[in-house]
Every structure is written in structure tokens, then in C-alpha cells.
Length: 45
Picture (cartoon, rainbow, N blue to C red):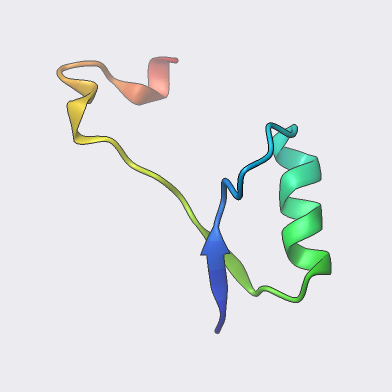
């Protein structure tokens, strides 16, 4: 399995970004996670 980082330098809508990644031959994406979210429940955002 070959993956790439979900953000590759261009500010694109997520659907378009993932379509480009898939068309480029990648099997999946790596998502960025920040440990500085604090006590915020990310599911509420």
C-alpha cells in the first residue's frame, strides 16, 4: 500500500484533493492530527 499526505501544497476542496490523489495511483492518504486541540471534542466541529 502506498499513501501520501492528504495536503500536498494546494488549497483544494477535499473531494477534489482526494480524487487527484487517487488518480495519481495512491492507495490511501495520511491525515494530519494536532495534539493542541485541548479539551475540544472534534466531533462537534
